[in-house]
Length: 317
Image (tube, rainbow, N blue to C red; front, side):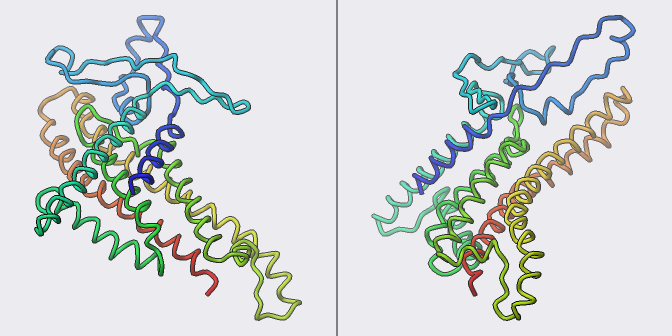
């Protein structure tokens, strides 16, 4: 599980490094300055070269902005440039990785110590064991199918990685890495590779039947037109699965933050404290809903990944 985790975290950090957000152009006239709108939503849901850190200065909203280092190596793949300089969301991916290492390795060591004493795990180790056993026995193995133990480490890593990334987006001064399409697309691409490799290993030469539709129980005059019509559908369906995984996670994690920021923004739009209780109450309700969504989206991504792996492995039946 450790090797799968480190490989997954490294790939997510390298591939999911979006470019820095551009700064808005400054107004050139007083009239333009007066008409300028203050955008409080976009900076919180997009990536950039700046991060907010806690501050004790109330005049600056108890936050200070720091610029992330630049000048890191740039790799070129044809016309595509990969800048390895960290951005806000890349730093969040590093934080998620560090939290997972501490949490999972610590739970594993605590479990080992308690097992050596003949005692059941307790505290964080006990909670982690309960979650892992539930996901393994009730979600992953029933959907992946027979001999599915080899997929458990990857799918558990996916679950905990998405869960921690989602929860960090609810913490002040943090950002939601899974609210960026580059991150969710990376997760979906990695899952797509696992799905297709699982199909190749399980089906062997029969894997071609998951691409080319060839109904063996029909007359030859019907097989050819059916194959011509449905083979493109079979091929397209392979790519709609990871697309759906990426868009679902990205949209759900972004939408909640936009709603919260829009509700809070009503206070500044109307410039009145009298209406503040209503937007604040609604924002708190949405935040509580976001807490549930953070767990739900991690669960759904893992569940669907398990289902897709199981479908391709059992497609020869």
